Amino acid sequence: MDIQKTDESGVTVLALEGCIDFAVRKALFDAVQAVLLDAPAKILLLFHNVDIVHTTGLGVLVSLFKEVTSKNGQMKFGCMKPEVYDLFQVTRLVKIFEIYETKEEALKSFS
Image 1 (cartoon, one colour):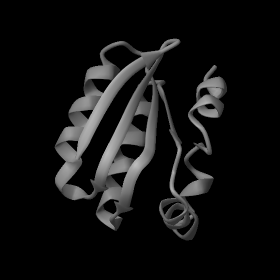
Image 2 (cartoon, one colour; image 1 turned 90 degrees about the vertical axis):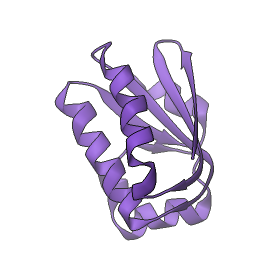
Image 3 (cartoon, helix red, strand yellow; image 1 turned 90 degrees about the horizontal axis):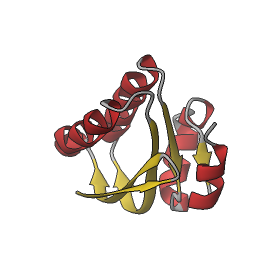
Image 4 (cartoon, helix red, strand yellow; image 1 turned 180 degrees about the vertical axis):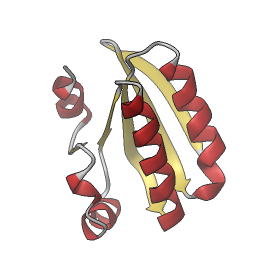
């Protein structure tokens, strides 16, 4: 997994590439922990280059979300491929996570 970090209007954008599973847990946690030093964090995870999210990867994302929100931060998702979005629908995580079609929509949603 590759993670590209940029800052756009006070939002940390983490563009993910590859497969999200338990093996990438440390890389994702390290990237998010670095952002949480500047609380309250605003984090946008972009999935446009993610082809597969394993069920263990869903657990990693839920853990990250809980960590961010427990520190009064916000974490949102954007740019999911249909097959990745379908997994979030089937698991009903679309009711927990804010998921946007485009990066622009997601960036506008941060308060």
